[in-house]
Image (cartoon, rainbow, N blue to C red; front, side):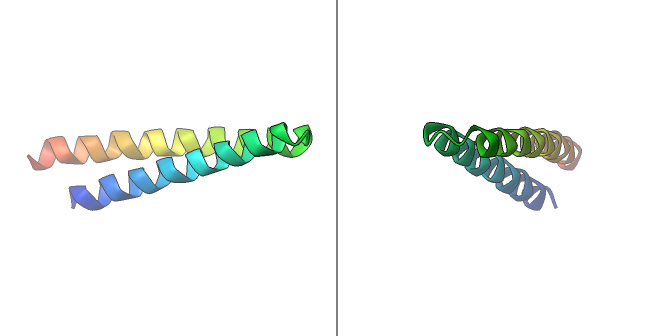
Length: 64
């Protein structure tokens, strides 16, 4: 079902964005070690989200 694929992709993007915001907040507080850890996690989540979006798009193309 393509809509579920898009929902999962959107959730992955939201997780990446939330983690990136956590990284920014840590950096602003001067906690650069934690900020870097969150930034690395955000990058990983962003890559996962991108792959989920590509998969959802492919499913949509084959379904329509």
